[in-house]
Image (spheres, rainbow, N blue to C red):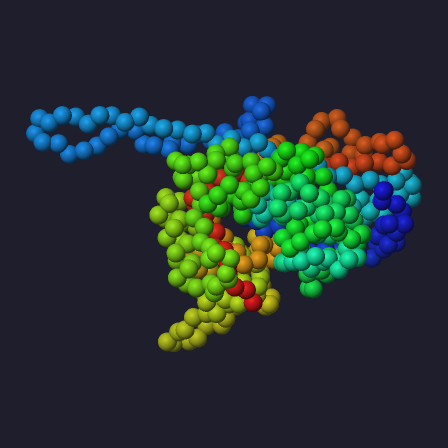
Length: 434
């Protein structure tokens, strides 16, 4: 399908009435913005290679006067390798749309700006969804079977948008499709419901929606998604090893590779309250693993709502003049929105042990993550954020001609979530929510 004059007619009509288009899509790119971008030469191999010292060299012991020397011990090393995941985006516009708007530079600018910004919002939301998942790119997780007409309830806030084309994958093997290339007809974020273009067959709780053709192992042996924090900050390999390989090429299930595991505090699937003691256990676990100290906590909104009293570090008492309580969820200035175009870092007025607490509303339910952002970053290609190919490659036209009476606008990006020390993060599971 192509964007037509009819599709953007209102934008063209009101070219002089406003300089900004109203978007009815929330964009949150919290984790994408928290993580720094690192660009290094990859020698044409598209890989980041990190050497790791797994055993210190040498031996040390006390001896008697004139005693024998200790036998020297050799160092041991390993190598983590990360291949950058390619992403592309495209939108199409008709020749007629260009002709109808080209005689008025403001109308043409308005139309293209609306399409560019709309695509950017979709791209950033999907990239962020990859980063906060386990490597499979899940956009919605089914709470149970659908209603027989393609409508289902998600276990937490769905990351889907109207118009997207998705597969519904079986959680058990990531190969069985419950629904193929279904269009998202409606998303109700408050009710957590999603309506697809047709019913799903044989689905069950924990099955999930993903961009069509990107996870099915009968199509590709590896998911076309980046690594995600839930898969990296873990004490085991990602859930589905057939789709997501061992992180950095290091199998954490192999004896001796415990250094590549992150602390994980679970409760055998039974939810329990989030307490100060539990958070301190998480921080202690990171220190004991040699990962240092987390510099950021991340959770969803329901966790913040329930534990507001515990996390409200903004409140204080004074023996002289009481100070005003500033910020706060639900109050102006309470959430980081300094950069509204890219969703901000989700920084809240809350903290724990002096560590800032970030809120990603689409984050996994019943889970809290703590990480040292110095050890988790995004390896990127030539461009730090997705760009139209005309801005990346020389002599590539902005509008690319197709076999129809349309032009394509293509975007390109390479990215991978990289950690040089997964032990610098902790995952706390089974947290009761509001």
